[in-house]
Length: 114
Length: 115
Image (cartoon, rainbow over all chains, first blue to last red; front, top):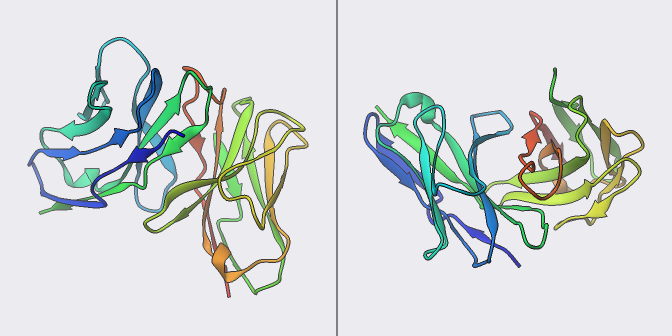
């Protein structure tokens, strides 16, 4: 069965510093990959997704993620974080070949330090 | 459009009491889901529905029942609440379960405490 591992449960980073949130999934021939963000006291919302084509995908607020098939990874990066990026970030995978449900990782809480 | 709405936002129950959580979506989505979110556990799928009149078990279905009598509504029931069901419950919907359209849209959550 498909699984998702987010290696860090919490990541503290200073404002305006770069950040990388790591995500690995179990091997599959064909997957869709997602990053969701949950701001305090809210539901999850889609940040970005990889369906096909270019392996680098971007969000409207400066985040990007790169699909690496050989390493089965989909790490999320931002070159300069802002206090408003404080949230929990969830990586998720959908196994396209098995038309399976979306599997969520356990989440990474991003703490922005002033 | 309101998107996905959940009722109630907060609830405190005593052990053994029953309740129903209501989820409604106005996006004409076929698929709907109920998750629970617990610290350090991420999101776990309780039940889901692939269309009006259908339901299926997810990862942690025990102690919960669901119904999808109308396409826009998905109800989650707790027949006899237990302290282990203290959690934040999220409803989500999507156009489809698989494929390029399976972005899930989430409600704001229901915080349930069982004493």
